[in-house]
Picture 1 (tube, rainbow, N blue to C red):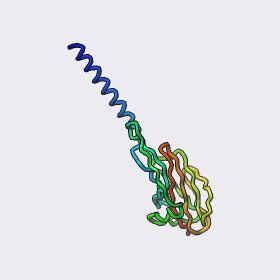
Picture 2: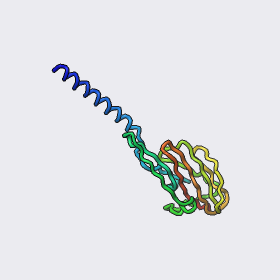
Picture 3: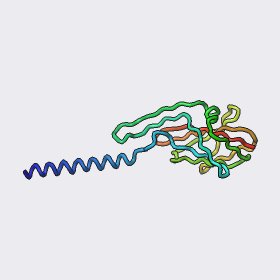
Length: 156
């Protein structure tokens, strides 16, 4: 009887220990199955960048992963899905803010199908001096994957 009690006690401790380990592992799992939201702010006016092509992998917490691949149009077409226009002044400061900060990101300015890489300093880019409509492409990388975003600005 004493052996049976000892064995049951040992198995109970083993099961509880494994369960706690699984709980700690699942606490580190990314809960979102999509890339984080990008907020673009100029002079206290904010819009949400339009999510384009992305590749995202999420740990399910049970030893498996779920991967999602999504394709989209080029940034000039994608930016047409922007919910509201962002009218700004020449040389305005454009602030990029992700819900979860990426490891790195690259910003490209599109004008008449010509692309120019933009300098980003502390999440800030400077709008062109010339007037017109411009599309920005943002390519971001996280441990879960990569994502492209697009947004447009009208410089008045």
